[in-house]
Length: 165
Image (cartoon, rainbow, N blue to C red; front, side):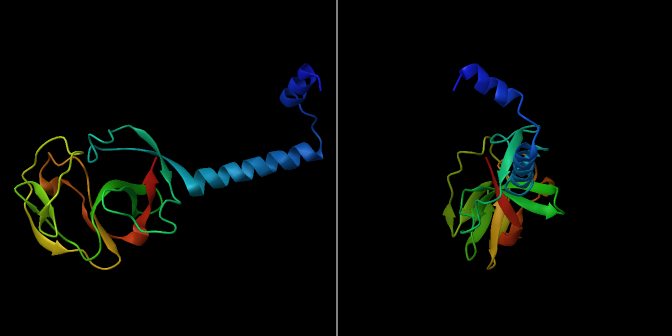
């Protein structure tokens, strides 16, 4: 087929029934993918710095935990309140683990954790606590602020809606 004719048909298709069926199908698949599978999100706040910065743009991959739960070290999107209030946090402990902060160091099951993703030292103190069944323990990467200024802790795995790409 002539390349000029192919280009013309691509740019200026015939507005027939087949075209509108295809257009409707593409619009429906795009809507589904962008609202249920690949959800665009804008990052507000500094709790995940230096990994993600305030104002960054990301895409939440909602199918990531469809067949398996989050693992230690994963960065997850956690539904906080309603469908649009989502927190971005790092999973540091799983169900059954004991988690604590001593002298700013994270301890999981009594073992100090190497966390190269945290840029600044912290002075957090948190007594040991056991992560309940069906939950994960999440915390942000930016620990330079006082512990009282952070939202972190145990969250149900069903509240984890995906991971950021």
